[in-house]
Amino acid sequence: MTSVWSASLVAVFAWWFFTGAILLVVRRADATDQVAHGRNVFFSVPLFALGFAGLWISSLNMTVANAYLAFISTLLIWGWIELAFLSGIITGPERRACPDTLTGYPRFARAWDTISQHEMLLVGALLAVALITAHAENTVGFWTYIILFVARISAKLNLFFGVPRINTEFVPTPLDHIKSYFRQGPITIAFPIGVTFLSVTAVCFAERLITAETQATMVGFSLLTALAVLAAIEHWLMVVPLPDAKLWRWMLPDTATSRQDHKHEL
Image 1 (cartoon, rainbow, N blue to C red):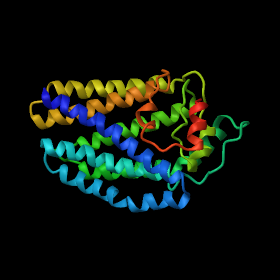
Image 2: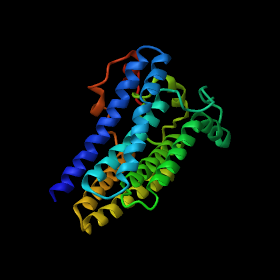
Image 3: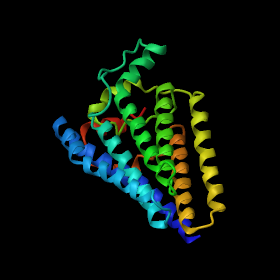
Image 4: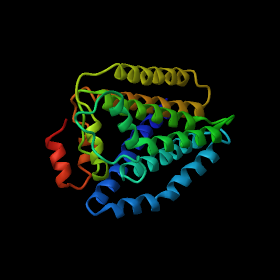
């Protein structure tokens, strides 16, 4: 039971730490210029490669150490892709704000053009992760990526279709135009679909955790259950007015843009 709580705490801390580290790097680059964003992405490529190397090594057999290694390695892969996106390096060909008059499919198509390259990179990385972990004894890395992938796609769709609460405080300068594609309003069918999927996923992993026969599988399913629960909670934070930004705001340098967004949260 100790390993279950330890693994869950590792998952929560890793989620908080990786998110905060990326926001910190992006915020510091925002205080300089676009060159800084590109430099950060370029010099962090070894971490991206290290993530794939760790994923391959950990997939060879299922041990407690490899369960943690697979989880952290996948976060490195995911984190670099998110850094490249938030830095405005890998986003999409459309860099202009969405006109207020644009609705329906034209609005969706334009929104896709703003993030298409990032989405294709996510899919490409998913295929690479699936290839590395195919027929592997340890699939913690694969399921970690699946949770992150589904949660991110669902969150983006909900922000596009509409949610009551949108926090733009951490949207960096290179992605300032993307705020125009967010819609504040009542939830749509996209919200219950996303939350239900993530909740069911968490329950499924929890059930496997309860029936786990080895320490390694117990740790693996603890990590996955905790991550799925966090993903579901993140969705609810688009509805429930809780000050979640305080988890990272204290560690980030202040800017004029962040102060304005803090005062005018959507």
